Image (cartoon, rainbow, N blue to C red; front, side):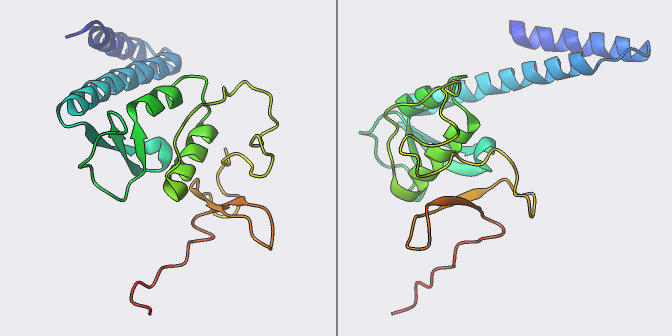
Length: 184
């Protein structure tokens, strides 16, 4: 058992004792959940490093991206990974997985990768004063709140057109039209 797992086990025992005594353990419960998440993330990171070293790629299902599946590749030279998923290089993930990158930025990058196969060349820290707009001031950041109409937190970028600027639309209230592959 590593140090973190030992701390988790000791924390569980201490919380159980304090609950028996009628004490409020809500703060300790949160800290324990944080430690368990950290342990889980360390395990995923280890398995990912192993897969990248052996075959050069792996798949992740990302809860922060509403369960979307992404491909992680060691670098741009890797081939043989499943098609149809947004591709992130190990270097891109290092830029995106810092503490100073907002969830809105992650979602915006993900939409850009899904729509256009974009590449991450730099990431703006979340403490940068930018009034919740992109640098070109044409597209707002990915919404940080659920849809006011249905409560869904999954948005899709509606491209600018003659009817207006590009904007984020709820994917439940505004589903993309189904393509008809059989149409001629």
